[in-house]
Image 1 (cartoon, rainbow, N blue to C red):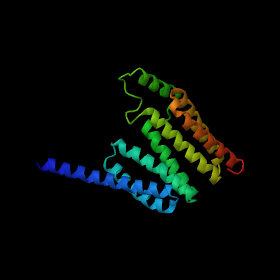
Image 2 (tube, helix red, strand yellow):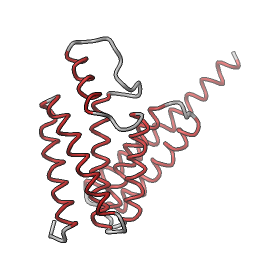
Image 3 (cartoon, rainbow, N blue to C red):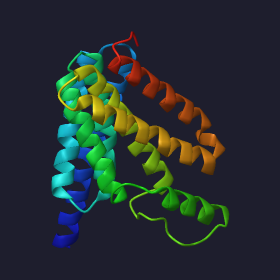
Image 4 (tube, rainbow, N blue to C red):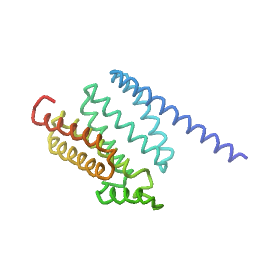
Length: 208
């Protein structure tokens, strides 16, 4: 009975932490969308602190890693809006690293197409990664690359231009593959292509 009670209390505590992280993240998004990036950052930092604590307590729970990646993605955007580009780049890079950890590395075109074919055939075989929907994670990884590329284009630090072009191009390539596999990704492809075009214009010194 004691072990059951202890386990139950732990689950309640962890759930309370998860709820707190989500609440801070939701508040941050509302403030960010309202144009209050600095205030949003305060809440999102708290959300990140809590989700990192959860990840430390349950390192094998990959849902925490997925949530960390998503919150880092938003945090990089908030930092960019507030003009904190160096920290934004570090945050976007941490976001990308988290998504690559979730997918087990770069997701190949063959893996995406194979996953799509299995879905169309209603195959019971698992996707490449047990950590989530492979296609969805590939899209999120591409978004992380696009965000980091756009930040690097503003930073103009040594080697940033080359990395920005590579990451932006990889993001577009991934969405081209996704759009070929699923027409629903067409709008996202157009969005990422425009984001890459803006990145290139910034690198060329043109007005974005």
